[in-house]
Amino acid sequence: MKHPHARHPIARHGRLKTPHPVALVAQYLAVALAVVLVSGAAFAGYATWSVSSEVQTVALAGETDGPPPQISAIDGGVNLLLVGSDSRAGQGDAYGETEGNLNDVTMLMHIAQDHSSATVVSFPRDMVVPVPSCPDPAGGSFDAMSAQPINVTLSYGGLPCTVLTVEALTGLSIPFAAEIQFNGVIEMSNAVGGVPVCVVDPIDDEYTGVVLDSGTHVLQGADALGFLRTRHGVGDGSDLGRISSQQVFLSSLVRTMKSSETLGDFGKLYGIARAASSNMVLSQSLASPDTLVSIALALKDIDLDRVTFVAYPGVTGGDGVYAGKVEPLYDDAAVLFSAISADQPVITADPANTGIGAVVDPNAPTTAAPATPATPSPDVAGDTAADGTATTQTPEVAKTPTALPQSITGQTAAEYTCSKGNDD
Image (cartoon, rainbow, N blue to C red; front, side, top):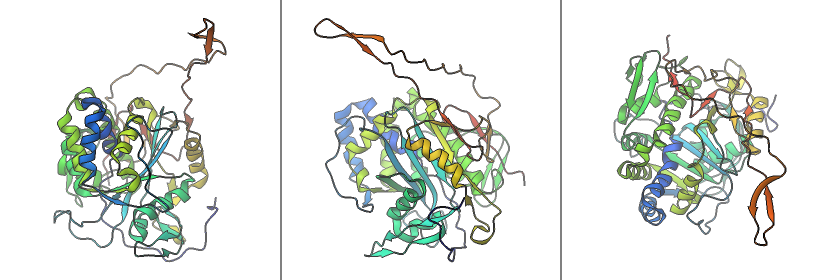
């Protein structure tokens, strides 16, 4: 199906950039939550204020300053866009040189209104989409473009342009956004003490220097960065394979961050916050420590099987503007974003639909099957009112996840998967 806003294609940016690490959504948001759990809300406010004083901020389109929320779970749902920049500015000499500033990783996190589920959507960097008119940081605005790879939006109009593009693509309003660079991934993986990653087939990538044998590796520092950067070494060598391999890391990261050992180590948690703050650009809406804490508190009680990582559906092998790029599957994506808009949790078509860069871990721990949600009764005994009369209440019932089309790959944080090396 043609996108409803599609126009005639224009010239594309053809030169591909060196792939770079994923922006780690769960790490950054878990910091404020963990500080609250370990040290109490009062100290959390002070600690996150200290961290937030070090970050750079940028105003999104139409964004204005407003009073910060109280330190409690944010009221309602959250849409937060996190992008990874391939810019080497201020990152040292270890990554070589590159021109421009592309968002080679673009991820949208949605937390449901009732804080019962969270969905993280990865957008392929080479997916060709319409780009709306974006504000020019120097003043005025850039013209809309009918067909461009999504990863040019950061260089075209900065973080606000990437947000506007994803809003147009998904139909969602995105009030929170952040941009992270190379060193942030290294420092945060060091602070968390490493992330266990399963590799089912050996990975040998001459472009990033990543060499990993089959088995489980605890990755941090430069090793974690290399794993997240590798594209040629996993799946079929494409960015689609890299996304599913990155989800292996992300799901393990969430399990690590929710473990009692990690949440009880204040040194690690505050170190993650400092690592993030020195390597990120935040929307003004995220600069308030109260906002960070409030968003994190909304995540703390979500079960692992209701934290889902998926990839925006697309296909390769097209022609014209899609030659060598990814063509969006708008109809299938509509199922995903309809569920997100309705605050429904989502699941892939089957547990093995992990994408071409990942497979189900053959040695995964066995877990008990989740309980079937009970059917609510219209008259359930409740509390006793002040006048002595009995009250009734309707029990909360877990929402049934929306099964996604086969073209949408991914996994939940409860599923153990392994990265699949590129055999070619």
